[in-house]
Image: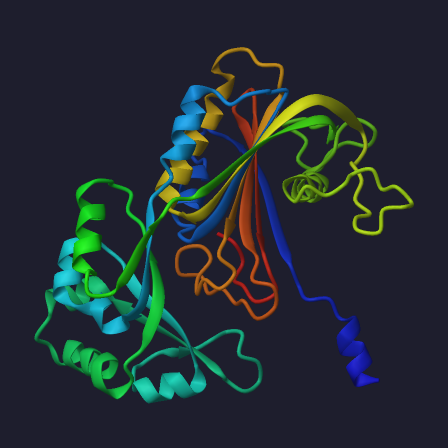
Length: 340
């Protein structure tokens, strides 16, 4: 019976919704974007749009490149040369199982989501502190740990906001390792006769028979981005999703999805461009921008611990209205700190 009860338990998921205006002095939209570091998918949906503008097309193509370095020793990331060349500020954060953590001999803290018996630890190393004190005992201990005591190797993704010299430098700096350049994958689709919820910017929770709320929109938007059917036909055994009410039907809509290692600076530029989409009159009353993080990232926002054993979700969405109001939705899975 105990096993049956556990199977019936649904893991906790948390969705935080709020509304504001881009022009408000206390608007948090930049902070939310800038501190969600590890993004692998960005999607934006523009109702009543047939083709992307040339400016949006240019922004989408400028998300890359990023680099994959195979079997890179962790000690390379704490060397003064690497930090001085590539890092302006930052930390190296490792999520280690109990055996690996004990073998490194480093100081860390138990994961918040280890359960009754601690089986995972978080190690955080301030890279700037190491670069300022390269001959300190602390640096010697960490370097010895990664080089001799427990030589860890992983596959790493690298990306830079300032293009040009940094990208040329990374290929030569890691020339001794297997390194490969990647470009994000871009998919643009035109949706026809799309059932769409009716929204009112000032009614975050919706109004009965007048408009839908943020929670209903969140489920609908997820179905659209996954290309799930919204008809809820009796013969459909894959999806029982349907459009929330009240609703309307969009004659057309444009959905663009970018997949890769996408840094927050580029996401911020895209959001800034999308909020100015309504500078000229448009048929669409609103548009959306959705951003998903890597399921196995050690953090979600900033240094907030992210667990991936039960789903790994951490994502956010903006609903941008023509009057510059916006809804912000932030969601995390079962093993996560509350969104900021």
